[in-house]
Image (cartoon, rainbow, N blue to C red):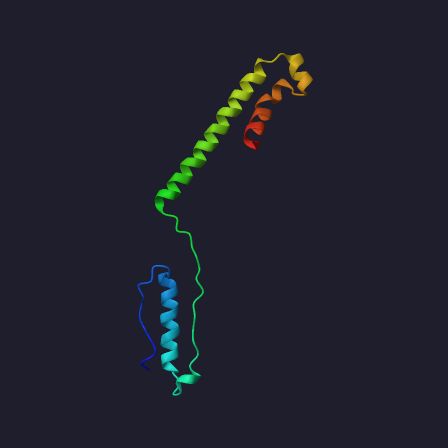
Amino acid sequence: MQGLHIGFDQTPDCSWAEQAYVLVTQAMMLKNYPADRKAHKMTYVNTVNTIEIDFADRIASVFQGLFADFSKSRLAHKTARVLNSLSTRELDDLGIARKDIKAVATRAAFAA
């Protein structure tokens, strides 16, 4: 049983979950370790890359979302202000009723 290594490696490219999986697999093999080493089968671990999102990244994404929504809201108000400055005839040419200006401006700003 000398050929069997049990323990966590200090490999930077191997996560603790992968190392734990190898440890459990090796412990199970120890329980049923064959008398003949040639009958011993080799185990391997596929590497799984994960993305770790820390607290600062979460806060940054919240602020980015809020800033994007604020920018779109400002664009909607600016568009509504410009449309309100148009005459009724110019709005009719565009196919917009005066009562629909706010809805059209909001839809245009948030669709972009």
